[in-house]
Length: 233
Image (cartoon, rainbow, N blue to C red; front, side, top):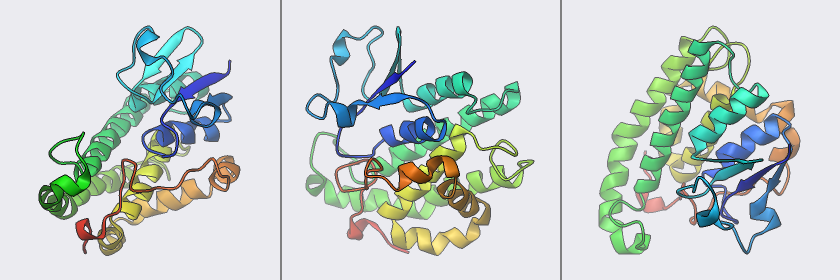
């Protein structure tokens, strides 16, 4: 089966978490952000069940939305997650935690109104970003570090990577882009986490994709945005 991935064109955003697993798993898919850039959402209201928003995956008669839910499906169908119950649920737990952190990172530049421009809420964004840098980044990344310390192998769930490891890589990449000063000041505290990021970047399964133009760059249009006034050591 060839899947269809629907997401907005021009930004990696939340769709990138799904792309990484599709690419690393060698799974056939059509990326509609490239195939149909003028119609990124397709006829979303006509889908059954109707997704709340992209990204969503069309798999035959199935329409699967929400990043963690899509990756749970891909993990089960394509061996991108542990087979044992404890490992399967822990990978999903990590993914849901990543989803929470992505939402908080987004809210640093849109803390008041999602439909208003960043420039219209700069004072609130500075306050929100300061708390995110001081408290939330260390809290989340400290938990990821401890999870890796307690693993029986080099990856979150043992000796083989799962979709959760790929998503953790993307999260660190996004945080490095959005908050380079803060991440540089903190990363020595997380050797396991930064080591995992490097191992994912070196995976043979991802080499071609990461070097291709399909791997979209971060920008101030996506979830992770770099505004110098929101960063700081």
